[in-house]
Image (tube, rainbow, N blue to C red; front, side, top):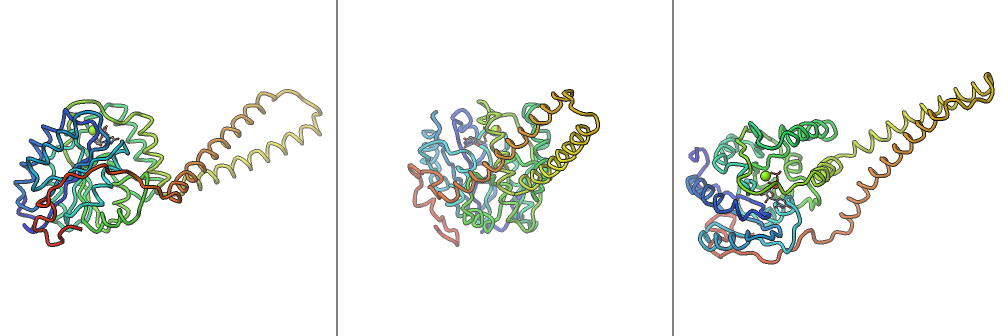
Length: 328
Ligand code: UDP
Ligand code: MG
C-alpha cells in the first residue's frame, strides 16, 4: 500500500504516553517495522504526559536506538491526552500526521490503511473502531454521547473516541494556530477539514494496564467537546426556560382563578413544592452551564501556558532528515 503515496511524502506519527511502560516495548516492536515498510521519511513523536512509571526511561532508550526517527517531548506533569498531542502538533514536521494511542488499542498495522485513504485526496481521515473492545458501559455510553454531539455541534464522526487518525499538515497548523485549550482534537481537526473521510480500523483490547480515563474524566471530556464547539446547550437551555416560564405563568393564572372561584384551598401544596423544586433545579443546571462557558472564557483570557515541557529528546539527525520543509 505504501506505493500509493509518493516517496517524498513525510509522515509524523504522534503518540501520547501516560504510564504505558508495560505497553511501550511491544508498541516499538510493532510500530517501527510498519513505518519502515512504508518507505518514506518519517518521525515518531512521543509525548510523555507526566508518567510516574518507567515510561520515560523506555522512551529515552528507544530514542537512543532509533534516534534517526524518534523524538520525545517530556512534560513535567500530567496535562491530559489532548494536550500531549497538541505539544507534538506544535513540533511536527511531516506533511501527513497520524495520531495513535500507546496502549496498542489502535493497531499500528492499520496506519497504511489511513495513508491509502489520504492518498485518495482526503485531508482528514478518521478511524472508526470495528468491533470495539471496551467495556459494555463505555461502548454504550459513547454511542449516546456521539448522538448528543451530532445534535449540538456540526461535527459528524462515527466514532469520536478513536484516536487512530490521519491529518494533512495545514489542518494541524490550523489547530496549533487556534490556540484552543481543553480541546478535543479529532473534532477540532474535523472543523478545519475540507474533505474528511472515515475508514474502519481494528480495535484491540488494551495490551496491559487499565484505561487512564475515569467516568468523571470522560464526562469532563464530553463537556469540553460540547461546550467547546457550540453554543447550542445555552440556546436549548434558554428555550427550555422560556417554556417553563410560560407553564409557570399559566399555573399562576389557574391558581388565581381557583382562588376567586373555589376560595382558599391548601390541597396541592406538595404539587407546588414539586414544581418549585423542579424549577430550582432547572435554574441550578443553567447556572452550571453558564459556569462552563465562563470557565472556558476565563482560561482563554488568562492565556497561561497550557503545559510545561521539561525536556525534549531529539538528535539533529531526526531534525529535518532531508524533508523539504526542514525543521521549523
Ligand atoms: N494518555 C495521556 N494522558 C492522560 C491519559 C491518557 O497521554 O492523562 C494517553 C495514554 O497513554 C494512551 C492514550 O492517551 O496512549 C489513550 O488513553 P487510555 O488508553 O487511557 O484511554 P482509553 O483508550 O480508555 O480511551
Ligand atoms: Mg486505551
